[in-house]
Amino acid sequence: MPSTQPIAIQPIATLPMTATPATSLLPGFENPVDDAQQVFRATLDAFAHPGRIESLPVTSGQPEGLSAALTALLLTLADPDTPVWLPAGVPAAARAFLRFHCGCPLVDALDAATFVCVPAGHAMPALAECAQGLPAYPDRSATLIVEVASLQEGEALTLRGPGIDTTQTLRVTGLPADFRKSWRANNAGFPLGVDLLLASGDQFCAMTRTTHVED
Image 1: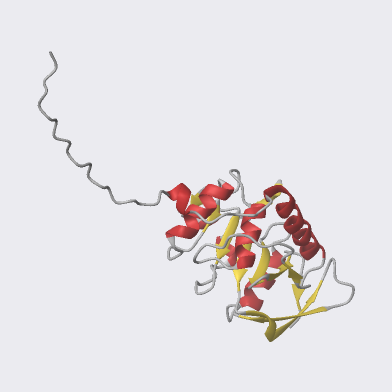
Image 2 (image 1 turned 45 degrees about the vertical axis):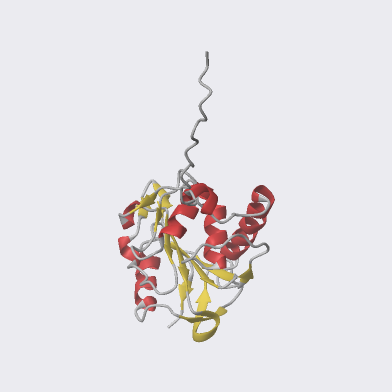
């Protein structure tokens, strides 16, 4: 027969609740397909009209270490086939966000990256050290996505080239002191060379390898 003695029930230990990477991640775009298409169209417009300022048409979750524009551009452009380089000091939250939402590999070798992402507070790497493309495949070059302090004030760059009727003035604060020299060298390598997206807050603009900066 079953025992009639009372059974002592041991309390269950309460385990500390810790957020898993999946639950602690910020959301990406609210409507991933439609929002990415809108940002992609704005990016195409930026490259078609170098130096012209574009504003983000939509917003997204924004991890620590990335600005609104950097986040939206990477959500739109990066994917499992496009390695991304980030400076060593970029927070782990930003890396986890990109791995989860973009599926992009994060690489340590600068010349292995399709997108070289430089958030605020980090030094912009030398253009010549980034992937330059191959003579038969110039499109295998890198695009730098660089956050600057301002796209509204600062040093005036006078741009000319394809997509610009005469000249385009771009005011930028936060580019390296030797930017003009290194960009001229980038022009000289055409059809090889890198392209550039400059971002500040929720604004961005583009400079292609065919965009020249007047002295």
